Length: 309
Image 1 (cartoon, rainbow, N blue to C red):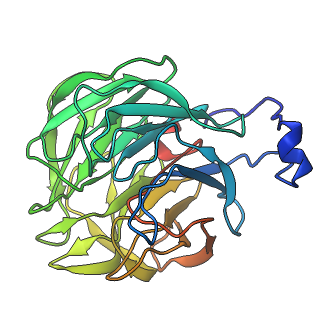
Image 2: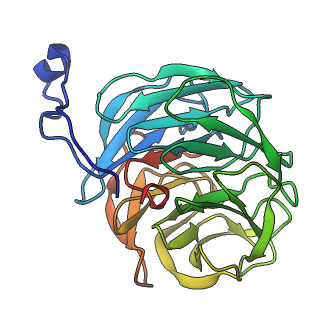
């Protein structure tokens, strides 16, 4: 797993209002960015949790622009929020520095309803209603580049991965799972199928060996179902268990052992709920706490997900 070192500092203005003591930071961090609030307005909110514990999220800072339906990926040091809301903007946060996001660069073309995966070097994102894959080098700010093409367009898909393989699943009108080798450019390869004929607006996370896909719209109704795959071996998804609430368009990331799901909506308003599961063992989710703002169409990343081992 990635090593963790360094002293986290927090400006005095935040210390004065009682924010987290960042000389003792959470080692396993999950950061939630953007989304759409109960008034259907995109927000620039970033909040975080310590994956190894349970409790409510805490304010982290703000994105450079308010947006929703983006994608997000991360190294062990940096989280990147990509496009969304017809914006071509990418921005990033440094996990060891509480505060606002910084401009990273621009995508080839703006998109929404996409998903991203990464290892500690490279992030790969789908492009909404397109079959184009784009990539970035996370440590060096700059514009995205063409990676290759997906088998099929995957609007409203989900992604996860290991350090070698990125996996994209579902999307409007498809249950296809496909994968790429992160270190080499090229087109995606068929992996298998989700356990539903149509699963979109879902969200994904992973350990180094197992990928999870949860929530979303499953056969024309929103669901709390979670399915899983073994990332190294192609095949169809298998039932894992259920989340505590039915939703779509939420966010997910993972730590050393836990998968985290947060936000989303069902039919009327967004949730602030956060759930967790133990990735290595199948079973239902447990309540973790609440986001600082109820919202859907948000995205999440973290510093200990499966692509970093």
